[in-house]
Amino acid sequence: MSIHTAFTRPASSDAFFPIPTFNLTDPGDDQRWSTWLAVTPSERGPRPHPAWVVTSAGAIDTELGILKTGKEADVFLIERAVPDADVTAPGQSVILAAKRYRGPEMSDFHRSSRYTEGRGMRNTRDTRAIARGSSYGRSVAASRWAAAEFEALCMLSERGLPVPYPVQVNGSELLLEFIGEGRSAAPRLAQQRGTAAELWPLYEQVVEIMRGFARAGVAHGDLSAYNLLVHRGRVVVIDLPQLVEVVSNPGGMDMLYRDCVNVCTWFTRQGLICDADAVFGELVAEMF
Ligand SMILES: Nc1ncnc2c1ncn2[C@@H]1O[C@H](COP(=O)(O)OP(=O)(O)OP(=O)(O)O)[C@@H](O)[C@H]1O
Ligand SMILES: [Mg+2]
Image: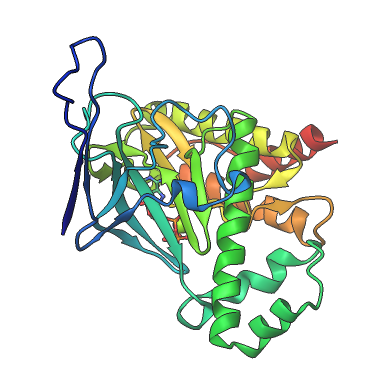
């Protein structure tokens, strides 16, 4: 059904004022009204919002399909656009990645307790519901992971680290800057091939990212060649729900070390000479 609200020109009017014409069309199948205004300001990404973020109340979100099914979330592609707007103008139309967390019954949440140690989770009603595995508990758990990843992305993005800009979080759904070309996601580092000399700049970027994390006192916690995208020669780090504070989390140092080993093992396999212990030592020094 379409609602056409046209402000037609009164017979006596002249041409001094532009006459707005609204053509509001209800969302169709696979569409919804933009959820931008449905969330609180704290659930929107850090200010200033980039110019490409669509903030119009009249915008519509359209599902474009699934990008990837992951262990704990599915990533979909959506378009957020103002109907009939000039798609080349900033803030009128954008492709976003929608990461939707599933409840733990369908996902591999073995990481949960390890990663949340030291985060001060109290035995609230929600925590008990999660432990019981009720459907309410499952949705609370999914929302917590989405909120944790959103918070991590906001902090890292404000520090200028190369992460997808977090547009907003809404319950268990996270909307992120889409890293890719057209509708194709950027390849993961794991898919990159080349000589050691060709891969060296990527290694340097990854270590620089890890230094940036260390300066913030955190470790990715699941860093690997699968959670690093390479877009136009630049490395972008993704998948951050388990970001750990290295000092306050009892397993923080182990997780930082594992990140170093994962990264160095992959690059060593590609023929680079790199040493996880040396990188770990450097990062720890950066932290204190
Ligand atoms: N912002 C983004 N832009 C482009 N592609 C993305 C983005 N976020 C995620 N993806 C794609 O979706 C995949 C899964 O994302 P992510 O790693 O965050 O989720 P996950 O559920 O932890 O998945 P996995 O279990 O595979 O690690 C990524 O490997 C990447 O291909
Ligand atoms: Mg991942």
